Length: 493
Image (cartoon, rainbow, N blue to C red; front, side):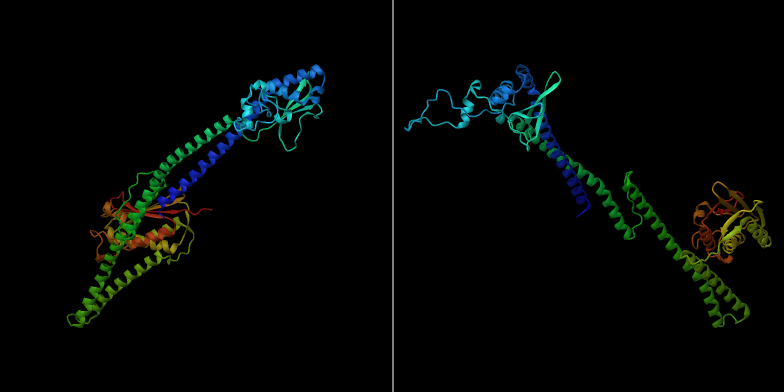
C-alpha cells in the first residue's frame, strides 16, 4: 500500500473514531441532561403541593387525616399537578351511563372498547385521582416514617423538605426518573440524535476532503524525492528537486540537492584524480623506458650519467608513490600522531631559523612576526615539521618570490592560533585557490614537472591540519603573491 493511501486511511479512521465518540458522548449528555431537567422541573411543579401539605399540617396539627385516607393525598396530588406534564395516568374506571349487569348476548350488541379507550374518553374532571402508590409519591413525617405510600429501597427518590416556621415536619418523596418516557421528551431526543448523526456525516465528508488533500500535500513531495533518489542511484547527479516549502520535507529536498551536488563534485574529483595520477605515472615511466631502451639498443652508451638519469626518474616515481601512500593512509586513518603539549612560539622560531639559510640560497628572505610569550597547543611536532617543510618547498619551487613572511597571532576569544605564511611571488589566480588542496592539483602556468612536483604537498598539509582539528585555506597575499592561513585550536585546561 502506498504512503498516500496509508496516510489517508490512518487520518480518516482516527477522525471517524473521534467524531463518533464525540457524537455518542453528546447523545449521552443530552439524555442525562434531559432526565435531570425533567426531575428539576418536577421539583418545581411540586411546590404548590408542598404548600398545600404545609397548610394541611397546620390545619390538623399532624398527618392523621392523610395517614387514614391515602386517597385524599392522591386527590391533593391530582389537584396540584393536573395542569402539568407530571400527572401520572389515573386508574381505569367504567364509562358513565353504563347499565349494570351482564353485557347483551345478541350479535347486534356494540363491540366493547379497549380499556385504554376509557381513560381517553373520560372527561378529566370525571377521572379518579390516582393513589399515592400509583402516582409514585411518598409522604414521610419529620422522623422519616412513612405517612402515605410505600418506600422501596431499590428506588432512588428526590426529597423535598416540608417545613412550618423553620421546623421540618415531613418530606415529599418522588421517584427519580431514570429514563425519558414521555412523548415530547423522546421526540426532542430523537430530533437531537438525528441532527447529531447528520452533523457527523457532514463532518466526515469534510474530514475526508481535508484528509485527502493533506495526504496528497504530504505524499507528493515524497514521490518527487523518491523519484530523484532513484535517478541518483543511476548516476544522474545533475537533477534537482525544487520544493517551495518551509517544513521538514522542504529541508529534506534542500539536503537532497546538496547531496546530489556533493556527489557530482566527488565524481568530477574522482575523474580528475584518475586523469592526473595516470599522467603523473605515465610521464616518468615513459622517460625511464625510453632511456633504458636507448641503452639496450646501443643508441646511448651504458655510462654512469645515463644510468643516473634513469635513476632520477625512478626516484621521482618513488617519491610520487610515497606521497600517494601517505595520502591514502591519511584517508583511512593510517597516519599516526603522537601529540603532546607544544610551545608553538618556540617551535616556530626554531623552524624559521632552520629554513632561513635554505631559502637564502634561493634568494628568498624569510621574516617572522611572532608573539613573545609561549602559545601552547596539543600537537605532533613531527607532523608539523612535515607541514612546514611542504609549504617552504612550495615557496622555493613555485612562488618565484623574493620574500616570505610568517606571522603568528592568537585569538583568545575563539581560542585559536593563526599562522599566516605569505610571499610576494607570482601568486595563484583567484579561481584556483579553492582547489589547491585537492589531490594532484597544479596550476599549470606556474607548476611544471621540471621542479619535480606532483601536486600532493598541499593535500598532505590539509590532512595534517585537519588531524589537529584545525583549518587551512589559501588566499591572495597582501604582498602580492599567495598566502596560506592555518588555524589550530589552543590547548585548554
